[in-house]
Each structure stands twice: as C-alpha cells, then as structure tokens.
Amino acid sequence: MSTKKDTEILQGFIEGDSRVLREMYSKHFPEVKSYIVRNSGTATDASDIFQDALVLTYQKLKSGSLRLECSLATYIFAVSRNMWMNSLRKRKKKVTIDKSPDISVNLEKSIFAEMELQEQKALYQKYFLKLGDRCQELLQHFFLGKKMQEISALMGYSLAYTRKKKFECKKRLLEMIERDPIFVELSSDTLKAKGK
Image (tube, rainbow, N blue to C red; front, side, top):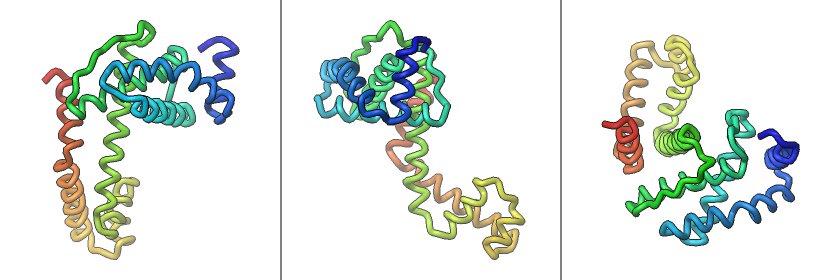
C-alpha cells in the first residue's frame, strides 16, 4: 500500500469513517457477492461473509498484526473467499476455486491460519465458560503464568491439591473441546494442511 489514496482508505477504515465504509461496500461487495453466489451461496450469505471479513480485517489492523502486501480490497476479497470456502467445507459442499491473481499463496495461508485461530479461540471460550467457577478461576491464574505456589495461596488449596485440581480442570476442558464436531473438523483440516 503506497499511494496517498490507499493510506487515506486504510486510516478511514481503522477510524470507522462511514464514508470509507460505504465506498468499500459499493466498490468491493459486488465482487464478493458474485463469487459467493456462483459458489452455492445467497446474497444473504455474501453479506454475512463480507461483514465478517471486514470485522476480522479491522481487528487485525487495529491490533497492528496485519502488514498488507496487497491492496486492502484484495485482502478483504481473499478473506471473504476463504471464509466462504471454509463455510462450504463445513457444509460439505463443492468449492470452485477461481483465484484472483493478486492473492499470493502466503497471503492465503496467513488468512486460513487466522481464521483457524479465531475458530480455536471461540471453541476454547465456549467450553471454558461451561467449567465451574473454581475451575475457571484456577485455569485463569495458570494461563496468566502464575506459579503453582501463588495459585495455591490465591485459591486456598494445598500445593498438591492445586496440581491435582489443575490437571482435572484441564482434562475436563479438553474432553469437552475434543467432543465438539468443530474440533474434529479443525483437526482434520490441520492434518490435511500438513499433508498427512
């Protein structure tokens, strides 16, 4: 992204400038909609996917974790397309891949990795919230990197009981996650990506 216009669009997008967002919808949504409708989708699907792609892109830009190597429009199209392909895979529908020449293999891998990470986080969050309050509290301390002695003191448990409880809570969380069909799908996709 090098031109002044590109920089203005990026800045407007990050700031939530309604003029920039309207322009993005009017210029770039039709291409996404056309792609999705040609590939077993509806206009509503296209609208949902485009919105999700904008949100994901916004979050990455806002956090500073996105370094664009193409135009913002190309990136959003690639994210939309990959989200739609992922959605079709979950529904077990056939996907037609017509690549845009501006989308590099590395960009696609980056987008898939980001989408997979978001799905993993959502899956973890879903089942973490199903744990009891004490398990949530204990694991929260553990994930924040606190030492076992500190967690024991905070929870009012003996050191041995804290270790045992942490093991039980993590085991329960993993069992719930591993039974979820989305986890099975994510695991299958990861193995395919690694060529196994």
